[in-house]
Amino acid sequence: MTTHTRPPTDARTSRTARITDRIEDLLEPMTTVGTQWVALDALGYLADLGYGPKVRLAPTAHTVVHPPLVEQLARDAGGSTAGTSSSTGHESRPPGSLDAADTLRTMRRQSRWWVTRAFSADSTRLPADLRLIASRAHELDDDDLRYLDRDVLGWWSHARITTTWATAPMKPNVPCMVCAQVGGLQVVIEPLAAICRRCGSAWDAATIGVLGEHVRLATAAMLDEPRVARRTPSRARDEGLPRILTGLVYESAAGE
Ligand SMILES: [Zn+2]
Image (cartoon, rainbow, N blue to C red; front, side, top):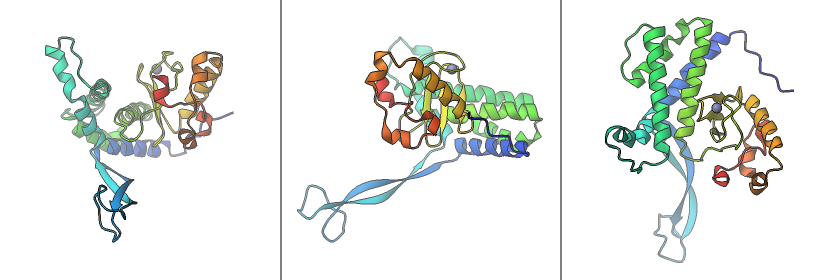
C-alpha cells in the first residue's frame, strides 16, 4: 500500500540541503514560542497572585531561546565523564545523561571519520567538524552522500529525541524492526523522528511509514497480551501523527 516517495530528479541537491539543514539544527540556537499565564490586576498591570480580588490570569507569549542541540547534549552529558575513573558504583546522574553521552560519542566518532577519511582534513572540535562536513558534502559521490545523509539523520534524530524539552518521546513497546530488541524505540512528533536506542537506527518523516507499518503489525500480534489492554491511546498525541502511527504509539509513562 504505502510506497516510498520517489526520489526527486535532483536527489543530490535535496540530500545535500537536508544534510546542511540538519547540521544547522545541531549547531544553531532555536527559539520556541509558548504561552505563559500571568496574573494581571484590574488595570492590566502585572499583579501578585496573592493580592486583590480583581486579579485575573491572562495568556502572554513566552519566547525561549534554547541552546544548540550539541550544547544541550554536552551539558546533559556533563557528569558522565566523572564516572569513567572514580566511579564506585554510586549512580547519581540523571537518566538522560547516559543517552546524551552516547549520542555525543557516536556523533564525535562518525563526524571525525567523515572529516579525516572522506574529506582528508584535520578533525578539531565537534562543531567545527560538523560545519566542515556541511560545507563539503556536495563533493561526495552519490554513494558516500547517501551514507552521510544516513549518519546525519542518526545524529540529528538522536540529538532531537535525547534533548526533547517539551514532550517526552513516546516509546512503542514493540521490537525494533532492525535489531529486534524491545524497549529501544522512541518517537517524537515535532519534528517527526524516531530512533532505536539499542542499535542506533533512525527514521525521519520520509521513512517512518515503514516503521509505522512494522509497529502496527507488531502491536496487532500482541493484542491478546494483558499489558496492551492496560494502556490507553492519547488523543492529543494522535492528532499530530502520520495516519499509519495513529493509535499505535502510547504515552511513555504508561509503559514504565
Ligand atoms: Zn534497533
